[in-house]
Length: 114
Image (cartoon, rainbow, N blue to C red):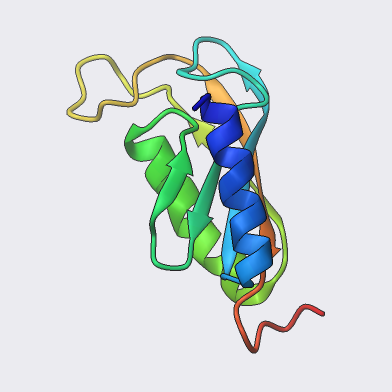
């Protein structure tokens, strides 16, 4: 199954099952990044994911934001900066920046959104 098809099926399943989840989509990139604009990842409330926006610590930032988005029901933009010094211990040294929109697919029960 193609990755985009797998992601689409997962989003439909989350919506059908009313499973709290969020969709993260790279909307803008500058410089060298692991994925291009349009790359997407579904994040379930359990932390399980389908798809990727590039992995590493940048993806971890997006996973943390997804928890808040699922809980609150409000979308947010996350800037992932992959510009650490090449001699740092961080793997985030691609040199670019990604803006990632994280939006609720299904809000968690009790979320303040409608």
